[in-house]
Image (cartoon, helix red, strand yellow):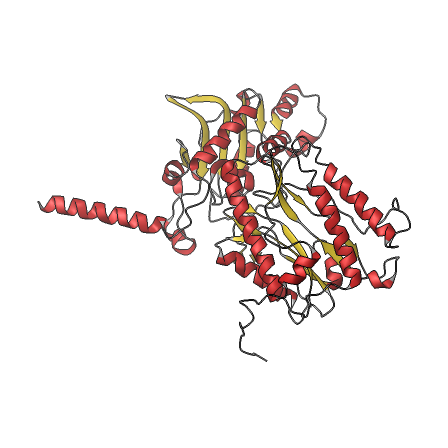
Length: 488
């Protein structure tokens, strides 16, 4: 009787512990079935008798003994769901046989280590890779060097070119540095011999087998059209980002610093459980908005008569948004600011209408350029509608997903693509036009889902028209009474 009691006690504790742990961490990451499906989709695109090899992202050092927060390589995560460093996965076009074992994929992960996990958290290990990620065969990274794979039998070995940004941890003989080194040895990889002409037939055959280009196109084809599961997460990331824009519109005042504006956005992200920002936050007040990728965000006062350009995006369960709004710090556009803003809005609206299935992805940009050039000419900022200038120096459209600039082939719009529409006008101080335009920088960016019924603006929760922005900026903010002690 006592043995039955202990059996059920252990079973109960196991179930409740598992339940507790499962409900202490997010439960809406992509499922193992999603990643399994993506690996199968990859196989369909691989050439005959080939193997595709993917490595986890390196750990990047911030300073001394402090590393940056780890972020997995998007392709590696897309295909595996594994979020830890020091790993590689091999995906084979056809079934492979080794002894009595057949397989079409192998994953090598970092080994469980009680001491390391005490410092840096639990590792998934090989059992986790099998149970949670669905890999039938999972090995510790230390086993890769002795694993018998005859790479010479493949017609194609596909991987992306290596970069010189992987540090060697001398205390770990199965870190990413060693995995890459072992892989290079196994395929007889030599960068110099691959890039130089040769008459050696053996070397020529080896060069033909090793392909560091094709995977980029294959992954672009896979990732540019989103699945139903991906759209759920992208929509969440975009809506979180839109709420951030909405809340700062209500909270904004001209005594704020750029960093404080950034902080309001990112507080909203964390409040919704977003793990990171999808890219460094851009908050440019006045002339700083003319710097396209301005990330210093160190201006101490945004200024009473200035515009504030805010290009930020939450990353939610790996998927990132990319939403930009430009608002007047004091809640009211000047005449010149409104003219420029409304011109950018007009260009954006016309561009969004081109996000239809089968339309060339270059069309929104063409439409926006035409409208902006004609508008700048009418305002006297440029001398003709065909004049060359740098007031609108970038394109309007890029995919978003696991990357803020997600891979894609950029041919025609297809159903379930999510693509930004982001025209802008930037007139820095000293420009060849009337001084009244100097320092005006406007960008409006939204994330557009392509559907059978036309474009859907996923970020519409954040007001876009100049009138709507001014109206929202009059509303009360929950942050108005959030005052901290004066430390001066």
